[in-house]
Length: 280
Image 1 (tube, one colour):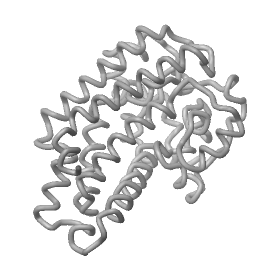
Image 2: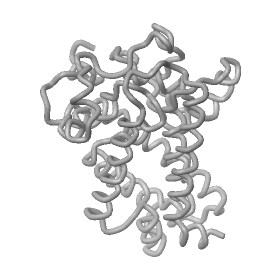
Image 3: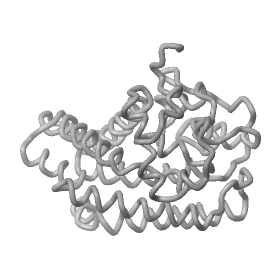
């Protein structure tokens, strides 16, 4: 079964991505949580082209995939789970959880280091908040993220199956928790004990810096609670909060591909957001 999963990695990831995106598109159309600011068609087209560009950049610049790195680590005996005899099920579960924690730490780092924040501003500069916001990242950030992921996989010796499960979960939950959808308050309260919900992550996209620097989790919600970065609700409420970065409201520059790619190199607007600002 594991070999079949690995052999069909590309199709599994593609079908999972398309399936979740389709479900979120229908859900957002039938029951949107917030009124839209920008036209949906143009935004989605731009963001999906950005996904294709990011995929091409990674394929060209990196000689292998995360699954390939896991298989290499396994054959060479690198990493914790390959060096010591762990039951496969334990290595599988622990590998997924550990990689999720690494992504949480990476996310915090991209908010803490000003140079990385410039790249990450592409994600936060979106004027709306919907499923495609979850795939809106600058190609340089995607490349750096892959290098960090490779290093984590080698250090952990995470099984290839764990890496595949993690990759599918990360993409799926990123689109889910960026969805312009809402859940009944009682259901949301219980569900966010297991996974990051849209109402939980939406706070992270607030224009207010102290709300932006909270709720960093993408998949598992535990790290925010354990490490003190959890915020339950936005001050202005979900319908009243402003999405984006203060001072950046120019739709022409923020929602078209050339402008998105140039965002990290533009003026320092939004530089009051990094966590390690002296004023904090």
